[in-house]
Image 1 (cartoon, rainbow over the protein chains, first blue to last red):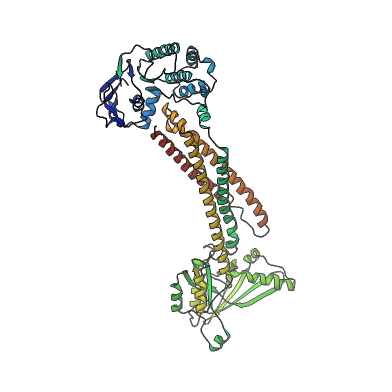
Image 2 (tube, chains in turn green, blue):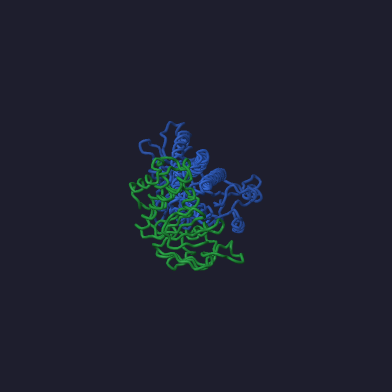
Amino acid sequence: MNKITLQQTLPEVFADRNEVCSEVWHQTVEWKKEGIYLVEAQSGTGKSSLCSYIYGYRDDYQGIIGFDGENIRHNTVKQWVGLRRNSLSMMFQDLRLFTELTVWENIWLKNQLTGYQSKKQIEEWLGQLEIADKKKVLVSKISFGQQQRVALLRALCQPFDFIFLDEPVSHLDKGNAKKMAEILVSEVKHQGAGVVVTSIGSRLDLPYTKIFRL
Amino acid sequence: MRVVWKLLRQHMNLFQLGGFFLANLLGMVIILLSIQFYQDILPVFTSPDSFIKKDFLILTKRVSTVGSLLGSNTTFSPSEIDELKEQAFVKNIGAFRPSDYHVAAAVGMQGTGIQMATEMFFESVPDEYVDVDSKRWTYTEGDIMIPIILPRNYLNLYNFGFAQSRSLPKISEGLLSMVRLEIRLRGNGRDETFEGRIVGFSNRLNTILVPETFMNWANARFASNRRNLPSRLIVEVHNPADERIVKFLKEKGYEIEGDQLDAGKTTWFLKLVVGIVLAIGLVICILSFYILMLSIYLILQKNTEKLENLLLIGYSPSQVAWPYQMLTLFLNGMVLLLALAVVVWVRSLYQEIFAPLFPLSEKKGVFFVASMGIILFLSVSLLNIVAIRHKIKAIWKHKE
């Protein structure tokens, strides 16, 4: 997949508003592979909705979202499963980690599905993000900031054309955010993929191609 | 899949699954055992008289002293037969045809010097009521050999009455079947000799039966004046326990010969009881199926968030459904195996009790019941698997 386009897209809940002032909603937006985009927003402007529309788990929107010009509204279950394994990666705002499993099991759950990263690579990243010692600790026992790092690593354990990060650094200090950015950039370059980051304040420090105000 | 299993195992309640397991086991055992029992026990009621088809009655008119003196007729007229045919409980009617000539039979026992001879009679019923191998139950005109079915009473009378008191050797059925009877037929100015061969013994029919083809031929040949009306009817009924039968017979003054009605009733009640037991087993099975479905739905419900997250990180619905489907298959499979084991065990227990009373046929075995069990297992498992798939699909669609 090379590009994602939004044509006159608008969440249905906004439909009865008189005026929508946004650089994404009700506009034509195009995100290309190898581009790095930031969507800045205040809370309640539909940032997570945007992610869920593109990731295929909600479809309460108007307008058209297209992957390579193909409307995604009527994608089959099989197509979505394929996209989520091979083309689209998502780091959710609420992380969606499994609190009953350990850090390592959470990451491995994804990697055993795709078989994409080596054990060594994941361990190296855990070291860089200073959570190597938490490998065998249950996710419920670590802080939200640490959980965010686990969620990022899980999102990297698959091939992708686009990676979406929904407020990835909301609970991280500058130092850890910088390390996360480094890992992300190197992996994105390696895969030649596009990045879409959302933020409501502290933004991940990346060389953005374009910034949108939602 | 190990990690997935570890994740989805959460919230599984051993108590619920155990409850399902026991309920399903109980239902399965009841169903399979009642089928097996029915199969094993039915021959006891039906097999002793394999020469005559079941569910039939023999009707006669009452012979009363006054009637005899007044010379009233004990034969059935065509209009009476037609009336009987119209009754709802009647499936089919056949007439007994008596011999209108003299029959004398003699049997000699070599070595004993005893020659027994007796005057007797023949009767015939339509061949469809006689369940003897059709090769042995045929007669072609001019044959010397006549196949005969004797009432078992006759043999008993000889063995336990006559032979006992005279210290004569007892005769087994097999031995008697090898004996050639000398049959002399007289009438219409003819006197001919035939050979009789006994092909079977009947508990139910108190008459000496020959094939209908022979009877027709012999009546035409030896009878001087033809007497066409039958005095006994063989009636096939739908359900021997039908109360309308008793009512009708009473009204008409007909009588039923022998205990066919009782045997028929017993079989019918056996069927009824087994049917009720089967129904109870089925209800328990259906209930246990619901318990399993509810347990699994509950587990799925409690795990909804996890399942949703698994679907979101790229697991397909069938991958997520797989562990639950395997669990139900495993549980159902264990239930089937255990139920079959219980059936085999209980069967050996009741066979021990019945063996001295009735000869149970060993031939059938548990093959039929095992295949019934497998069919049940497959259908229940299929339903479970479909229901789980359905639920996972619903979770996929509820995407929030």
